[in-house]
Image: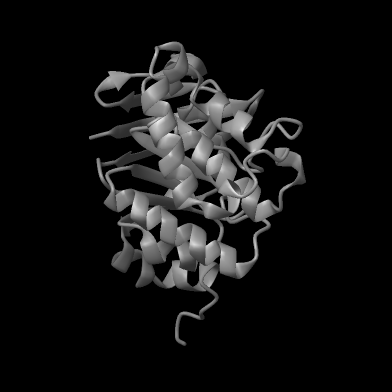
Length: 242
C-alpha cells in the first residue's frame, strides 16, 4: 500500500474537523475524495503532507509512519501536494517557479536530469513553454495551474496530491487538465485527488471516498460510487428515482 491512513482525527482547537477517517491509495491508482464544502477534504490532504498536525491516528507512506514527520521530510520522501489556489511565487518567472520545485534535486547535483525533465514538462504543457520567462502572477488561472502541476512533477513525486485543481478554470481547460491526470497515472504517477467536480473526478479515478462532516460516508470503485443513490443525488445532480 503506498498510502495508508488509519483512524485519522484532526481538529482546530476544540473543533474536531476530521473524525476518525481511514482510507488507502495503492500504487498506480487515481483515488478521489469527494465531499461538500466543510467536509474536511483539504484538511485531510494538508495533514497528510505535514502542514497540519494529526490529533490521533496513523499515516503511513510506503510503509513508513509519517504521522509526526515534518512537511519538509514528507516532501523529500516523494509525497507532493499541489495546493488549492496554486500558491505560486507571482513575482518570479515560470522558469524560476519550476526551479524552486526542483530545489532538492538541483542541490543533490542532478542538474542534467532536471534539465531533461523540464524540457519534457514544457513539452507536456506547451502553453507555459511559451511563457517560461514571464512572471507567474501575470498568467491566466489555467496557465498558473499548469505551472503548479509542473512544479510538483519536476520533483519526481511518488504520490501526487491535488487539492481542487479545477477551481476557477474554464470547462475546456478542466477537461484538458483531467486528461493530463490520466496520462500521468498511465506513466506511473499515483494520484490522490480532492475535487468538487464529482462527475469529472469520477470519470478518471479508480476508487473514491465520500466525506461527510469529517467522516467517510461511503467508498468504493468508480462504478460503485456512480451507482450509489446518495452520491447521485448529493453530488451528481440526479434524483434517486430519476
